[in-house]
Amino acid sequence: MADPSDDDAAPGRTRADADDRAGASGEAAAAERESTDLDALREEVEERYDFDDFGPADMAEMEREEWEAVFDPDTWITGPELIDRVEQDLEARIATREVFARLERHPGPDGDRLLAYSDEGYAIVNPDGSVEGEGTVLRDVEPTVALCSMEQYEVQTPPEDPSLPDPDDVESGSGELGNTMLQLIAAAQILAGIGLVIGSLVWDLQPDVPQGGVIGPVVGLLFVAIGVFLFAVVANARLSDRFRAAEYRDRLRAVDEAGERPEFVPQLSDDGDEERSD
Image (cartoon, rainbow, N blue to C red; front, side, top):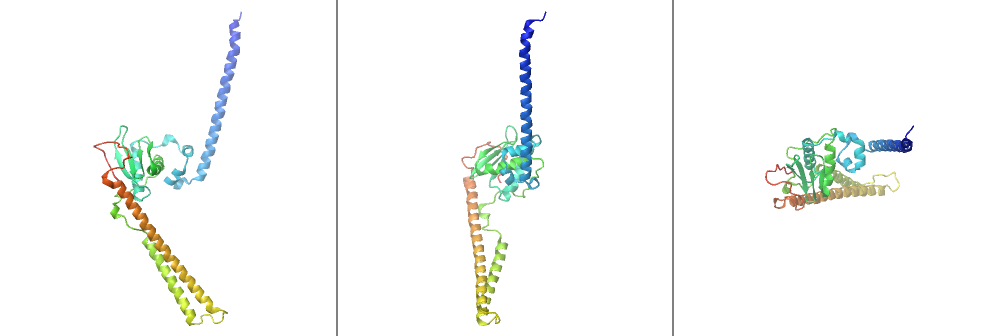
């Protein structure tokens, strides 16, 4: 004779099995939807960015979800190799003034760490790829760390001396060749305009054209106006260069003041640091 307890348990087992199957089916459907959404996001990101010419500026624009959609975390570089790559890339960007910071390397319990700081913030790069800090330096360093963790990214080669310059060595301006060319063009425009005005007043340059004596001076004055405008552009460019150079010197002096770091920069280690100031 069948045990009545088996009959009572059977419906319970049946319902439990049905619930398990429904739960598994729901999880599978959710996983499929998540995979579809991820593929759609990946296609959108690949269309938006040119990964053949992908740099820190593009990295800064990407959202974390976009980053995780297009890059495989299993291939990320970490450890001492990441620190070396980040240090090299930051040195190159500091030398070209893309990043304003002093760069130091300090030993830590899990390996060397990087400390980048300026008068407007700091960033600490750990061997596992995590970054902590504040201010503009953190904003500039985070994209660099993300890019250097990619095996496909080619790290920039820094110059022999990648350190920040001495404030007194900063030139007042740059692009003098372009300014000189504009000045030559402006002078030629003014001379041509003056010559055309004088020639129109002395000689009848267009005897067969009604009101020909008016056209020449008007065109000449137009040339003079263009020349004056170009001289004004050159003067404004030089003035802007002077202001930028003065601001850059002030920031360098702020970082170098009394030979100490700003108070908000944490102390990573004491004596025995392997310190590299850039």
